[in-house]
Image (tube, rainbow, N blue to C red; front, side, top):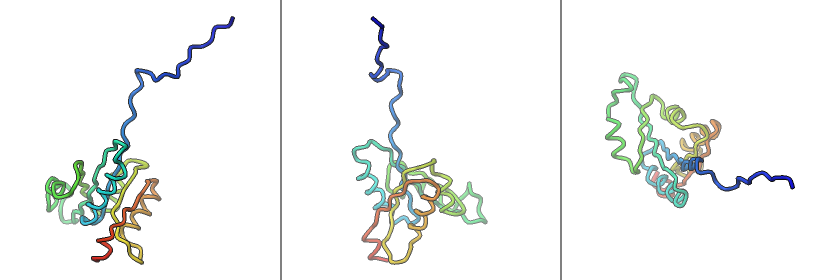
Length: 145
């Protein structure tokens, strides 16, 4: 009789548990953050995912990047969400692109217009960079301008 190899289909005790998926909520407008975060929570409800809010804050050129007009702590406090990361940058789009990990899952609040909005342009740029982008349309923002 030939001995058979021991089957190792059982999970190993030394194998680390998979990290929860990270979801990033980004927006170029503060009024769209609340809707995007609500969409992110609905989307990740049963996944145990970590939701991170990325808030770009443009610092004008006369000021040093480390000394913006409004402190990042105050900016983070004024936005909804538990895990808010303020991105100090000269250009909001470039700052967001540089802040996202490779192939991130991104949820953005957006307004529905017949012309292409800034949010749609940013979504196209993020997709071109290899990120997965979901636009959460906000009907109230679309009606109010």
